[in-house]
Image 1 (tube, rainbow, N blue to C red):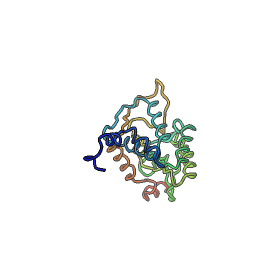
Image 2 (cartoon, helix red, strand yellow):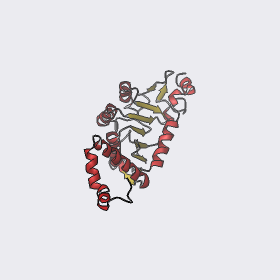
Image 3 (cartoon, rainbow, N blue to C red):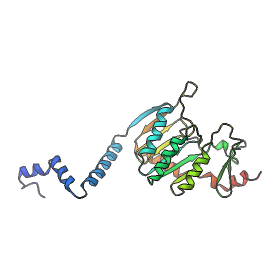
Image 4 (cartoon, rainbow, N blue to C red):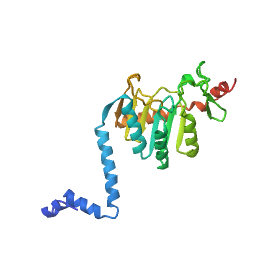
Length: 239
């Protein structure tokens, strides 16, 4: 359509956003097109104007964990050294199950390196079998840092293609919800969530910056999975 020789009233009508929206709604796929455009627009806005906000305390980071599990459309990545029932309680496990039931993927990077037999001379808690499976020595885990690991193993057996428990030997703490947002902070989100006078102060940052999100995603998937390290298997099973 050429705008040079067109009727000005006709042109004005064709460019009226309300009239255009009416026509789009009447289209057989109009609602879906509007939804896709809204998502695209929000993504463009997030790229151009990333949100950065501080996350103060365990309660706020727990809320972000719940938001990620509730709002994800594709995947959630969580890096947290310890997997304790203090945080991985029934509520979080149910939310993880609901995420997997929606067809999303859940990736968890876990395992403090000093707890892994074969890495540290004091590592007695996490043992690696030749099959690539991990065994938690509950007797050595006196603090219960990995008390929720058996429950996560059960969940992984139910969703073997969607849930990955990656032994990364990590001290990193972050959450990724698709490409929507990321949170990086001091709080071990899968180990503790209580907030009291005796609890240490926690601080983090939540952002929609796509470069930060992309970097975290790349780093997670490039990190080696230590349970497939043959050197650790031989040392872990030598006694």
